[in-house]
Amino acid sequence: MIFVLAGFFSLPYLMVAPAEGGRADVILHGAIDPHLKTDEYVARLFREVRAGDVLCFSTQVSWEAYPADYVARHIVELGVPSDRVHVLHLPIEPCGAYNAPRVVDYLRSKGWKSAILITSPDSSRMAGWSTRKRFAKSGIPLIVSYAPEDREELFRGWWRTHWKIQDIVDQLMVFTLDQVYAECRA
Image (cartoon, rainbow, N blue to C red; front, top):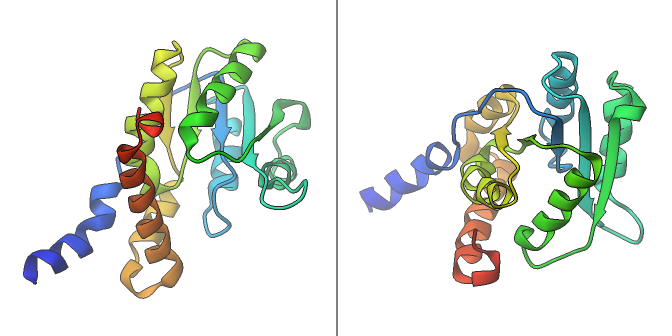
């Protein structure tokens, strides 16, 4: 029982990788979660000239409704020039591995050769491991990062907050299931 409790309470610490820094051609923003400060972080990275463009991408959540559209508008409101914000609508697929080539193809079509992927802290280790491999196979180096304030928020009383536990369990399930199916593995 002690091992089960220790494993449960260490989940966020095991799932969150250190945020990476660096410069790239484009910032990739997957329209993550309204609880996070991702939009503000992306705008801050753009102002720090960490990348020259921002690509917002998502699958649809309802008839012709894509979170990436709303995120792109919000990032423009935060000061990123609209001509530097791009949107990519992706089809709904069983796992992210199916859409990775579409994102890579879009990057290539724009002439971008490197990217910073902004993710949620609890998916940073998985994204750093699997997504980086997929992009590396295509010759595109990928930096994986997240807003530092999101990490602090995730760790603050996470076991007492429904959305935090739900995010952690969701990421753990997605990662585990992706390993079962060859087409979803890195």
